[in-house]
Image 1 (tube, rainbow, N blue to C red):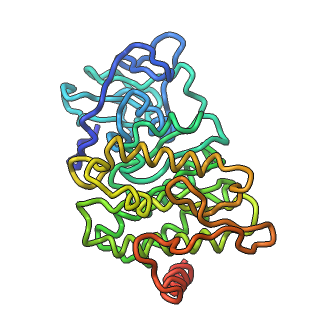
Image 2: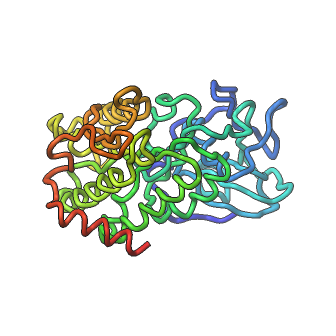
Length: 341
């Protein structure tokens, strides 16, 4: 068992219990699961399943191979000696009971169903408690603190496991906030998108937030979002576009961007903020009819789409977030990012 010193705010886990819940995921005891249930034994099932007991994704602390702890995915609360509070995946073939450590067990959550929607990305995905109720059968494997590089590193595993038909993606803010350039962040973002599209998924990107705590970064966030919107336009050719962008920033600005949209840390969304995200996402996800070809959404409305011949069908002036970049600068930023791939 390994300790970790990097615990995030999300290790204040929401709830735990041993009773069967509506999701079919429970906590066992010792090194065993209740009758009729089986352990979660893969990274994907562990990451997706632990949140069904109210545990955030970034309470997952690592993978080990240790005979002294329960095999499979297991949980330690704050009174388990020798174990940091959180979830662990033990790949040991048998493992063993250790104090109050508890394995995560599945009644009907596994095997994971392929061809569904997967939410991937940083804390904005991880802390989105209502995400799984928005799209039936979806999975959330977000992780607080993740960068686009982290998302890229896990993409192959999640493509092989979930074979998603749709990926809801949020990443980039942490990259830029930690000093990565917009161009370098776009390189990683585009690699994530290309990988998931090649794996058969449509990607819905939810753009950056104009949160109060990062006003010095909003210019870079705007440049980043604008380049992604340009990429979504470039990939669209009529019919369902492979990359769809939701202009989150402009949506919040249109609402007045009030403090009620954000958590007390001035970085993350409040329940009200997530409520708007939910409405905007479901509009883009379920678009049909004349909006089926829409690659750019703002405030729940399509503002960019193409006909089957690839010509613009619908485009609203000022579609870029915040102050739009000049067209030449936008094209240069996108071209630089693509050239570095």
